[in-house]
Length: 299
Image 1 (cartoon, rainbow, N blue to C red):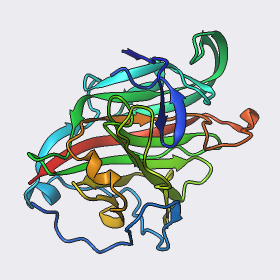
Image 2 (cartoon, rainbow, N blue to C red; image 1 turned 30 degrees about the vertical axis):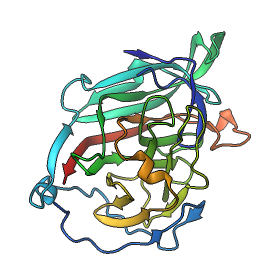
Image 3 (cartoon, rainbow, N blue to C red; image 1 turned 135 degrees about the horizontal axis):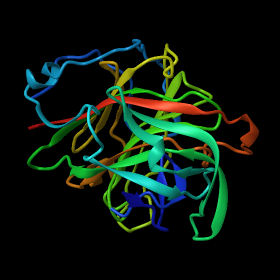
């Protein structure tokens, strides 16, 4: 089990202390492209399909090799369960809030009083708990596997104050990069956000204004959807339910991610910099469900 450290990093654009110790696809419809990263709302609403699923042969029949397959049918041996407090967030992460139930990972926000230690090491009483896990294995788009497809089938948590997050991060943030595949605010579940970070010195992110808001046709908390990201040397291609939603190629930072090793992470924070003047009285119990996480590689 992994306990948070006091090192401050960014996850999903939120400054925190702690989470880390640590051949082609079949043709898909074209989507909008952003050639330079900006804080942008996608002008095209993505068509989401409730309870969409993908067969592995969609990839393997087109030159991809499956390198990781987590179906959440057993234990969490492929993951480290995070525990502790995070700066700017209201929850205390506990192992009990990250459970495999009926073939799915459940990360749950609970309203309960626990005594713990704050991110800066001081005793603190918390009124909420939640769940967070980080992978034990790293993945990389590099000269050997220049294309990496990372996907997860997720039913995000609804509810004010929570954010469902699926991302990848490297050590010595952000020198090994961070890619946010999915961020959904619980009080706005008809859009999801992507983002990435990179820098040549620890603690100094060079990527500016890379947040991209993708409106969708469905409530993403109502059922499962498949979120996939193709990581290559010069682009990040984001897919929702088999449709290309967004391509980021801007600036010089995406090539900087090439060759870097990153861990996968799933987490359900309360608060953070997403929410200003958060009213804790409005926060309700909620759950993020993850059916599977898979990684495919290709030349």
